[in-house]
Image 1 (cartoon, one colour):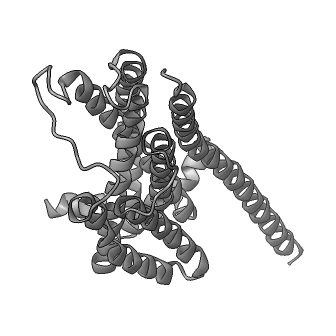
Image 2: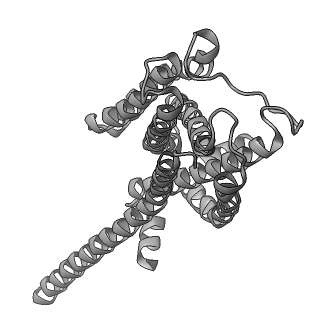
Image 3: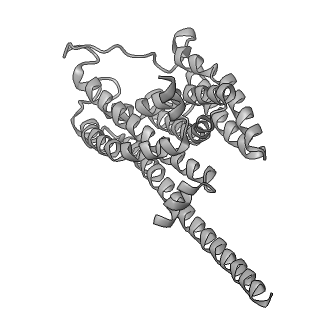
Length: 62
Length: 246
């Protein structure tokens, strides 16, 4: 490449990294979000069930 | 038309519609880049002055042109946020900033790598390069401003104002090569004449690459905006149903 192969390939390498990062990173963020929200929903559901059980127990005692 | 506009402002509707568009956009991007990249690297003839380094043009020009498009997009989204208080517009404005910073940074980097063998310098304070650097700092500034303000509404308004004010830099970048005596070359004219300095065998692959990189920009923007929608609407039932489905 006339002695400038390093320059040309360096630019294309940066471009490849740029594309790969910007396509992969949002997908990883989305998966992390879904994992976090699933844990939160599961926690909220457990809390709701605990509250329901304690309300049932209180009703039974009365 | 106003119904369509107000529907477009619904984060849920946008999320669902963009989900349908994405596979087609991925396919189109893959085709354009699969054609454009080998064409640029292997089949474009070497330039009579710049030699093989002309191949850098096929990355630098698309990336630089999109970075110039990002700022007005951010400014328009900011204006819509301020005027109509549309949440989705603010989400788009928030997501465009880091993408624009990436594009501006890559334009500067590829330009420096191209400039070293051609101009003999990695950097020069000419009008085009300096104004492009300012744009890069403006993108970083918008990102930093949003992180610095705790209230989401106040951050949206502040970033919208900064984006609108900063948009004055865009015509300065565009016309800098005409208004001032710059090292950066002005825009080249294209020609159908195969003997002209810019024959079709040079600019046709450039158009292919511009199309491919624009599609990549749209995909990246949609992916980030969709994530932002999920984050901001995480308490809504439709997002919780989506999370449960996995």
